Amino acid sequence: MTDDAPLLVSDHGAVRVLTLNVPERRNALTVPLRRALRAALETAHADDGCRALVVTGSGKHFSSGGDISSMPQNDRADARDRLHLVADVISLLIEGPLPVVAAVEGAAVGAGTSLAVACDLIVSARGARYGSIFGRIGLVADSGLSWTLPRKVGPGAARRLMLRGEIVGAEEAHRIGLVDELVDDGSALSVALERAQELTRAAPLALAATKRLLADPPESLAAALHAEETEQVALFETDDFAEGRAAFLEKRTPEFRGR
Image (tube, rainbow, N blue to C red; front, side, top):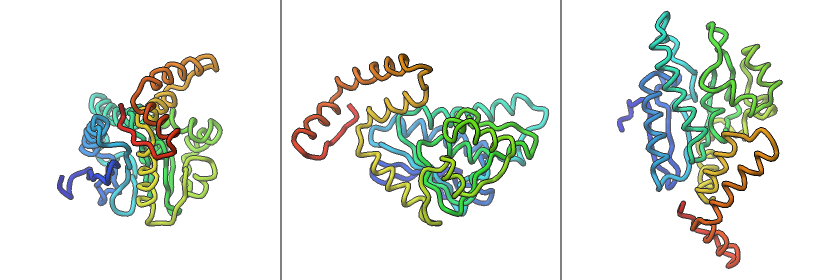
C-alpha cells in the first residue's frame, strides 16, 4: 500500500494498525477513506493472525470528521451511499470480533468523535479534543453517535454534548468517561499499541463473545443471564477454554489459538 493511499495498514505482531491518511484534510472521512476502512476491517476480522486493531490518524490529528467540501446537496442517493459506507465501518468496529483501540492526537470532532467512540478503548493525548459539532453545519449527529455516546458517557452528558455542540478537551473527555486513558502528546499510538498487545493475550473467542454481549445489551436481568449462558456454554466446548484451564492448573501462561 502506497504512502498516498487514504488508509495505511501495518502489522505489529498480532496487532494491526489502521492509519487514516488524509493529513492535508485533517484525515476527513472522504468517500475513498470510508471504502478503504471498510475493506480493511473486513479483511482484519477474517484474518486468524490478527488479534487486535488500533485506529489512528496520520499527521497531527485523528479526524476532523466528514468531508464537508464534497457533501451533497439535494442528492439523496449520494447522501445515503455515504451514510451506508460509514454505517458499515461503525458496525464492523462495534460488532466485529476483534477488540479495537483508538489512538487519538489532535482533533477528533464530528464523525471523528463518532469513529473514536465506536472503538472499544480510547487512548487520548492530553492535547486532543472532541465534539459533536454536526449542528454547526445544519446536520444531526451520525456514524452511530446517538447510540454509542449515551452508552459511553451516560444520557445526560451525551445530551449536553450533542445539543450544545461544544468542543471538549481531553481532560474533560476523560472526566466524563468519553476517553479511557490520558497520555502525553505524541505518545497515543505507542500506548494504544501496548494496550492492543495486552488484548492479544486474551482468548480471542472470549473477547468476541464479550463484544457481542456489549453490542446488543439485553433489556433485563433475565435476558442478560440467558445471553451469558448461551455464550458461556459454547465457550466451555472450545480448545481455548481447555488451554486456559490447563494453563491455570499448571501455573503457566496460556497460548490461545482462537479455536
